[in-house]
Length: 264
Image (cartoon, rainbow, N blue to C red):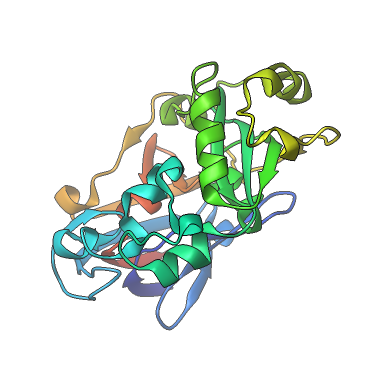
């Protein structure tokens, strides 16, 4: 089987295990079906996710000029507390910002390499947790806009991490935590504006990833430098492909690369 197209974040479907799909221009791949098969990845060119031109990718799948222009890459995306659409204030594109920011958001705890706090749109639960490789997660608050979620996350970051160690996550060096107890403990630190949205009674969500073999010493594949790589696929976790020789490849981290994919 041979495929070709620009890389974008894998789509997922929660199940036992989670199903992963790589969407290409004229086809899609159920990545789970590639487990235990020889997979070749070949870098062909760049294709910016905005302008479509063959320009080096700067960040988030965009070339440098697009990254500093498109609303999808504005500062409020990574720092929700900077959201201002609820005040009718434009950053790059008010119509887009209102559509994304003024909708239900959740602040959550996720356990991937450790317990971390994060923000996502309610519509992205549990997709966001899957993308982070979390094996368990729970919502803390559900608020009506991104700004309230952002200031809640900032307040909680003083008491719990907001980062994931990708190597620990991929090695599966994790332990189960009582996320309900953590949620209850962190309640006292929620800002006054968000306290009415605290979720009192919910349970954690558990996630099962399709992994046959976890790497002991994961090494990240830089496809732009290697140009071509072949390995036996042994697992998928977060947005990473895990290969038998300990090589791991971050699909989301390589958005905007136009690649060839061969399967034996």
